[in-house]
Structures are given as structure tokens and as C-alpha cells.
Amino acid sequence: MLNIHHLSLRKRIYQNLEQYPHPDKFKNFIDRFIYFVGMINPLMTLPQIWQIWHYKIGAGVSPISWFAYAFTGIVWIVYGIIHKEKPLIVLNGIMTVFDIVIAIGAIIY
Image 1 (tube, rainbow, N blue to C red):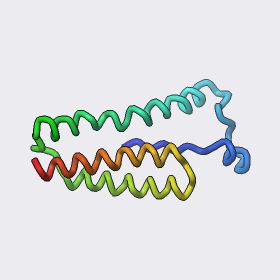
Image 2: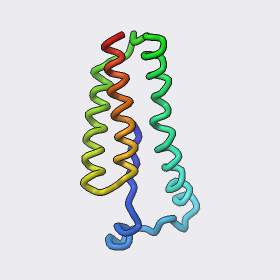
Image 3: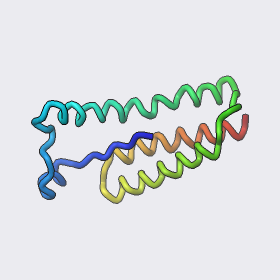
Image 4: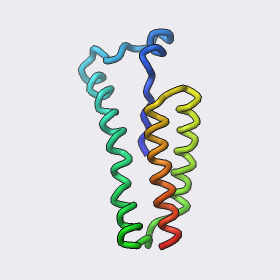
């Protein structure tokens, strides 16, 4: 699971970090591309959810793995809350819900 480690502008100023958007074209591209990746990441689990809940096929899906993903997502949510990073909270909140839905579906079917 990909997680976005985003630092706000305020933190960048006070911690003397690189400016955002970065003047280097490659770093600027990566800074912007990570938002796209963060939006696409949860969407990639939708086919798994569809297969389990629509077709009722849970064979080969490990609920232990998906609950483990959910646990790590919860840890990232706590991290995001502590550091007040909305992108981390939102992405991992969505992913944690999806992970739990898949794990429960794998147990049921």
C-alpha cells in the first residue's frame, strides 16, 4: 500500500525544508504525481471488492493479509492525525475501509 508523506507549506518554512512546488522539474513532477497516485491507489482495490461481493468469490483471498493491511492503515491514520496531515488521513481511511470490506468478504465467501 502506497502512503503519501506530505508536508504542509507551514512545516516546510519552519523546518527549513525544500520549497513546494519544487523548482527542479523532476521533483516538481513527483510532488504533483503523488497526488494522482494517492487517488488511484484506493481505486485499485475496487476490482477485488467487486469480485468478492458481486460474484461471491473469495477463494484465494487471505483475510489475514487484508486485516493486516487494515491494521497498518489504522497506524497511518493515527500518524496522520498526530501530524495533522489530511492526505494521509483520507487515503488511509479509505484504504482501511476497503481492506476490512475485502477481509470480511473473504471470510464470508
